[in-house]
View (tube, rainbow, N blue to C red):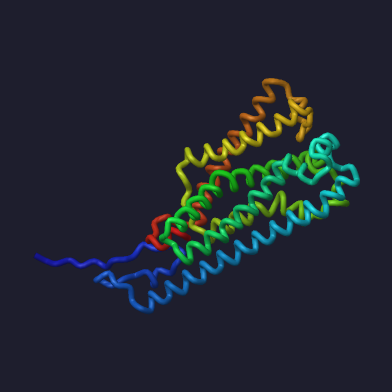
Length: 285
């Protein structure tokens, strides 16, 4: 009887060079390959952390400048809905009415949490804290951050292209810098795509993710409808003129669009992040 021996390979992140992950017939990784693997993981981990710090700092700066400098200017020049200002007693917290500003806060929280996850995973990847931080980061991105971010970017520029006065009047150009507008309505997607490229996310079950996305959207819907019907403050004036069937149809369509964005995010994460078949130490990437 002939004895057959087969080479054994370790299933690692596809982005790691194959030579570093090939073992001999006894399943041992050559020392030089081990060093290459370790160096690659350290470099990749450092790149992730630097990127997350940079993205967090960018959104922190954008929110600070927006809320403390430009928003008061818009209020002084009466470029903000007067009813909304009265409801919020003239404070800058009127911005929580708008999905663009909520999205901006979501991005800030996500990249802050990603920084925490990077540090916890580097120091204690197999601990319960490490698993919990990674699980929440992946769910938060999948269910909330990417679908809402995509919705904001796509809908803003679609409406802007048709008639900018409906969403970002030309009068704002004098008071609201272009870079800040792009921070709110453009850079969201590129930064999330880079994150997906650097981080191997494990998406939650589709039911869990979609329920999270729809649940968050429902909370926002209740908020703006409360302002509309109870306080006669219509954050988006076109909603006031939509009649019954069209009103329901609009929100039904937006729900479907949100679900589509969730699925797109799931596919993009799989394509950009590569295979999810990793050894246990790689699952915290």
